[in-house]
Image (cartoon, rainbow, N blue to C red; front, side, top):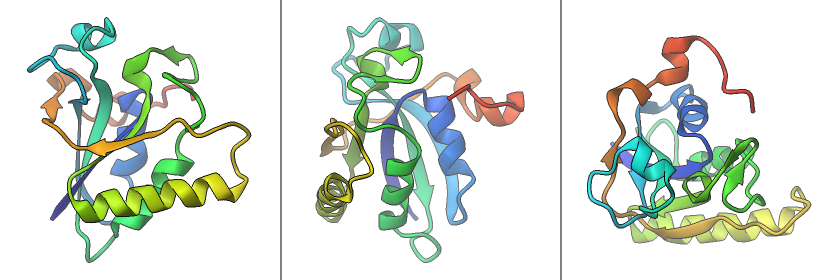
Amino acid sequence: MDKATFAAGCFWHVEEEFRLLPGVVATDVGYMGGTTDNPSYEQVCSQRTGHAEVVQVTFDPDRIDYAELLRHFWECHDPTQLNRQGPDVGTNYRSAIFCHTADQMAAARASLRAEEKSGRHRGRIVTEIREAGTFWRAEEYHQKYLARRGGGCGL
């Protein structure tokens, strides 16, 4: 199994988007990209930790490849919105790809170039691509939130 980590706004929405893909065997929501160890949701929402809300995807590369996950990432949010997605505003809602390997980094950069050339986006893509750091798993009540609640998050 391999791991991929994406930030694309509200982690409830992003988790639900990836959780349903064939070949994805697990999803966990949490925080990455900041400086505070083991942050709480409230700390991350304060925008003082530097963390983004992320979904960490565990996937079977024999059933779904990283390139397909990247395609899904670009389609499930607006990568031209800086530090926001829809009604959610703040640095914790930024668009980011956190890469676990050099191969992921190369694939993410290539997919960004392809998206920029695609003409699908009206503005400049602001997605950051960086090495994955420590994944801090969010509180249990955030895990599979939309699946348990039975609804969308309004985006």
